[in-house]
Length: 579
Image (cartoon, rainbow, N blue to C red; front, side, top):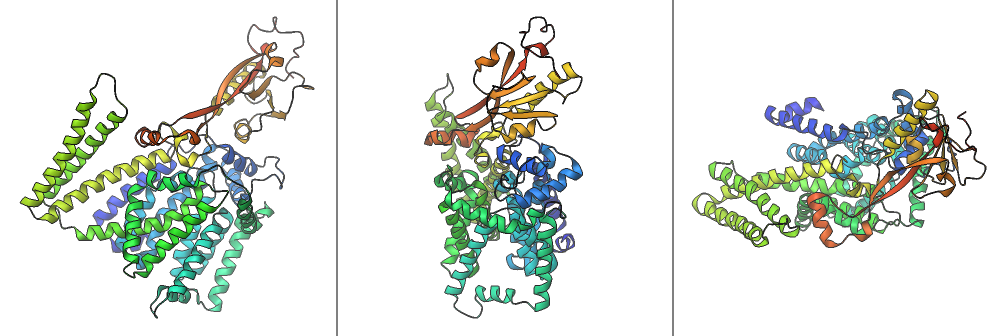
């Protein structure tokens, strides 16, 4: 693939692409351990780490992913970084998928699509989570690319990874089947793309055997983690069962919020993609029409699915990105080589549009001591200046130079917006809990709680993991994962029968039975956005600052009074020494 790129693109394009690729890698691997593992992530990590979880108690649809992750833990140890490492690797590999379709898309469109994938917020977000969705998406796309290029061993390997990764394989397959059925129904000639798809599936027996054997071996070997987790070999069936059970449970994630996310995270890509799909499907461009229908079917399946989640949107983004890449290449081809007027127009766009936007933000969220009418005049003046200057450039120089400069300026601003959105979606911003990809919230001060317990242990038993800890009526996988290195962590529902353990962790409320013999310190374990309370005006603040109404879930760490220096003589008589 690397040799093909060198032959297809000029050196300066490859250098620019390499720099963008390094930036994309930074987005996926930088500070990969933060935020801390969420409840769902911690549940998967605990299963992979060999926690005492029965088969019936495993998280539904994670058996294959858990088995693969267990191999990573065995080789590299258990940490937040290693838990997310495979997701980051597959999320990085996803960038190269478009080059497998260069013959179908064109090398320029494939390059643009690869850059769009680099900075796609959803794919970056799930490249930094303990979630098999990114592996399924990566496997599906590599499978399609290798299959089209007649590399059946690699196609089987990719399809096998997709099958064991996540239940989102099945809505993706349903959307593809519906698109294929529509293509067959609307076919109108020998050259119809549905006939090409049928021909692609018409393989010789030897080729089918090669593909199926590669697929089966991958599912069995990778799904079972080299036969150490036999249940993982049944991951495709278990994922299907999990997806079907999802039709019987209801998620609190609003379908409106999921649809709104297209405009919140990818407004330019959404507009370009839909424009390309609607315009050229009306001109009987069959491939574009099929991509549009693929987007419609996959989005519809997400919206009507009762147990909806944000990772399902990754399926919809695939055709949307392809359509947007084709639209962008059409725009680039329509422009001419820029001259001084084009660069002047570009600079005006880059300077005046952000200036106008900042003044509008200040109008919406006024600063004390500043006159609103001055800000309004500044915003209106900047917009008016841009319009007048653009008109004069078109009058004094070739009109296409003005269009070229306008698109160049918008492209730079769009690139800045995409990088900013990608950075925040990666959880590297100030408020990761306000990202829709973290809809259920993030784990906040678990590391601080763990260090506090470790300090108490070191002071008293000369070991940072030797103290006995009781979690009282607070079922939390994130808590169990954060305390995984302690030797004695037990869970109880009530206080009676406890022989005053050294440390007790409770929900964020006072426990009178502990007040005399223990000292307490509260920690904000979970931070999450209260999505149901968001008003339309709040979205403007979110768009500008990523600030929304949030709430925290508190826990209290209670330490026995005799654990502190100088407290042994004043501790209640009922306190027992540390064992």
